[in-house]
Length: 262
Image (spheres, rainbow, N blue to C red):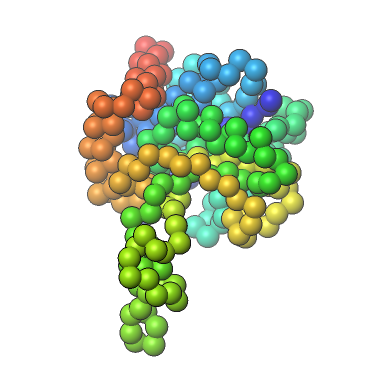
């Protein structure tokens, strides 16, 4: 099996200044994604992989290339793909097309690891890849989710004609009666290369989607300075108490140490 891992990050950020360049508990935030990839590859000798960074940030390129343990190709993001409203799937598709041409190879799965949701394990990555590749006729994408803290059928409301009511038209007296819903935690996405070429980026997640459950880390992704600070507090707890998370962090520290020595 041949996997393409993508890491995407634009220069700057409206919610968190220079988010993709930030240090997260003493390691560059992006190294946590590189660490998860490296640990996955170490445990799957039958898998070959390429890793690509798609960005318009020269600083992020330098940061990623400063470590030598995980070879990373670079795609300078075209201005047409750098806008706030561009679907990320369009960027992932650009990664696929560019890397297939550059490497002269075809990929069996494309896996995007989002820097804004760094609390993941190598097992989580493996789970997403396995679910997609074992069900190629069923899913166009498999993405990670957590249990939902609120339910639009029961305790989420929206404004209608000046009043507020439940988002979904339904009558339930207990949350347990409502249909199960999930939070996309924006951590792992395993894509079918075929579907990336064929489906519309803007409606990609409207059909043929599968999920894997990940541990609820309370903050879904880093979208504000408060999220960033809180995520570090939560991460420190996870690293102390859950070995599968800590090994990703410790491995990221090794990447950072090698960068410093270099």
